Image 1 (cartoon, rainbow, N blue to C red):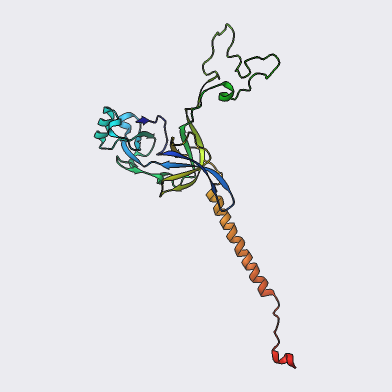
Image 2 (image 1 turned 30 degrees about the vertical axis):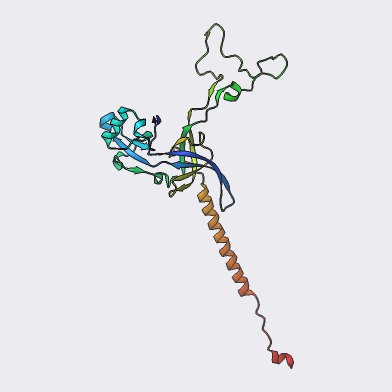
Length: 266
C-alpha cells in the first residue's frame, strides 16, 4: 500500500492510465486523447479543524488484500469499519459537511468540468547525460575537442567558493518524478464504463495511477463539445435557409398553363 503526498483544493479522483488514441468529431476535427479508467472511491474519514487544525476528507481507492497491509493500518481500518484500500488520498479545503465515512465518490464529480489538472509519476529514463536530461548543446564536434563531445563542461568556479552549488544541472537520474499538467480539456466522461477521455498527453506510462482534479486556472478557450454544438447549429441554420430559398423560388416561378388535348387537335 502506498500513500500519495500531494494536496488538492477540492475532491478529486484517482484513475489508471490505459493509453492514448484518437477521436474524430462531426465538425471534421480530430484530437489525440488519453483514456483514464476511474477507480471508485470511498470516504474513509472526515478530518475536522478541531482535531488537526485543518479540515479535510480522507478518501480510499482500489482494493488490497488484508495480508498486504501493516498491523497499524489494520487497526485503523477496523476502527473506521472500512475495507482496506490500495491508495489513501487526503483532500484539504473542501466542504466536509457534504461527506460522511462510507460515502462513495465516482466520475460524476468531474462530469460537468471542462478542464482538469492531472498529476502522475513520469516515465523513468535511468541515468542520463546533460544533453538528454537538460537539453545542453554539448561541446564542438571538431577542432580541439577530444573525447568530451557530450560533456556538460564547467560545473563551478575556482578556489572561491571551491564547491559545486546545489541544483546545478548535471548528468543524473532522469524521470520517475511527480509532475502536474495543468488545464487539460475533458473530451468525454463515460459514466457507464467509468472512463475519462482527456485531450493530450498525461504524465506516466500505461497502468500508472493518476490524480485528476478540477483545474485551478480558468480558461476562456472553447472546448470541442462547444465547437461541435456550434457546428451543428450553423448546419441546421444553413439547411433551413436553403429550404426557404428553394420554397421562395418555387413560388416566384411563372406558372405554365397546359393546353388540353382537344384544343391541340383543332
